[in-house]
Image (cartoon, rainbow, N blue to C red; front, side, top):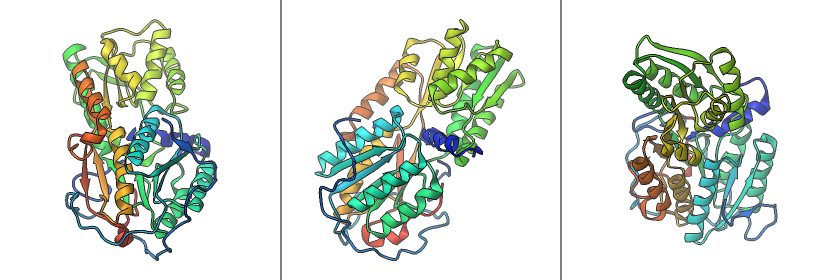
Length: 399
């Protein structure tokens, strides 16, 4: 979830990043690779100012290095003098972003923090303006995702210098970076499709792959998926490998309609859930959706999980634990205010959801974030350690 030559399209493409989007790198190295009743920031102040004085923090960590597992019992240090407020600079109302929103707010409420958010609707200039408003108002933590990394970077560094924790999906600079091994994610999706092709389709498949190559780190996911598909043998034909015009179901619908005009016998479609749900709708509208087809997405969108439960063409979704991440962010913001350490990296694993049983477990875990977020090794690994007083060790490169 997620460069074209047009800025607007480039901004829209950021939605697919974790979708978990979401994220590259691997192993134990830096940069491996949710709305309820929340307050929406309108620029008005309701607390103290920017708090701690700014600190010259240099360039941070610019090269990968090995990190130890994060220790929740690490020693606390100096406490920042900042407002008890956490901000989430959201870029769209995509379901997985709203999951993050709800989870951050839940943790913030549990720890006595004010939660503010704003949605930029994939508008980079608006996103920058909203972050500026957050900083002027005063915050203890800023949660962020990529939209226009170059425009965001100076603001993120300014936030860190002022003492705030910056909790980021990939985009540096940040005190804590969420990432995933994108090649591994794509390869898992491709391998699962190859297994189905071999076992259920006699090794013969006409495949549509929806990529998101305008986000640099997701090119690794693309390659991983193609490498996985190749393991099914020579009977696999990639009839189309494209990026839809927008990261929306409508974008996937339109792209699939075009594909079907030239390739009416497509029987496998993989990519992000948003694209693939649109593609499923196009197949259904054309009367071509069949239970023996194989569609799989990435992100664990609720609609995708509902389709998988039906037992039809949509066979799997590779999900990221966005609610756990959002809840962790809210908890880490509160810990940061107390001078406690937070992890420098949260490395996510994509979980294959391909049955009612796997979906039930995943959804139960996502509903119990308050009880499970510290014991969630199945979903992500926490690495490294950073506190307010040593924030010059911020991460300053994209995974």
